[in-house]
Amino acid sequence: MVCADRAGHLPRMKPLPLAFAACLLASGAGAAELREFDAGAFERARSAGHLVMLIISSGQTLVEADLPWLVERLSDDDILADAQFFHLDFQRQRNQLAPFHVDRDGTVIVYRGRQERGRTIGPTDEGRLRRLLEGAR
Image (cartoon, rainbow, N blue to C red; front, side, top):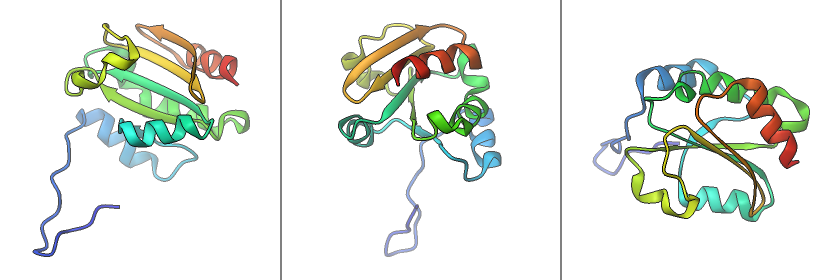
């Protein structure tokens, strides 16, 4: 929820790639949402033992174009419905990459709780992401 300050001003929102933002808005309230990376929320999800997918891309890779659609499809699966999805912008949030040992755009990492269970680098498809998530269950 976004709240205005006392003067009625809305907070400045961080930009998302246009196609990415449009797909998020069009998808409505699905079972899961692809959230912009926030270290606190990410750590809370991991600490709670959730299945967590971290998608690291800048919008310049093939990974980015279909992400909202893929997240919606993956979360529609009853087995994966409790998975949480985070997007870390490779260019804009570069200062947050060190703990993940990532040096390439288009990296996807899956965790079960605090343990990394799999990762892939480069163009992905639904089948590859589904196998990563299912392997982490």
